[in-house]
Amino acid sequence: MRSAPENKQEKIKGFQQAAEEFEAMFASSLLRSSREAGGGGWLGGETSGGSDGIVEFAEQSIAKAMAHKGALGIAKTLTNSLHR
Image (cartoon, rainbow, N blue to C red; front, side):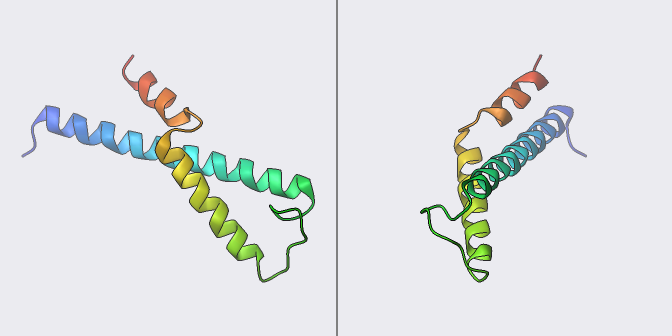
């Protein structure tokens, strides 16, 4: 049987991971909206149907890296609110 502090630490770690995933989804949405508002690709050119999947994958990868580093601070803010 697990002790209460260990179980609490696991819950906090799970919450932190969920908050980071939320931040990544939000960042991905911002990147996608920015690209779509520009009317083209990241480099100012038109995108082809074949490159759309690659661009989306790149956006998701960048968003995950941003969230992991806490670029937007969303996950940190949510996690800090848990400790109040």
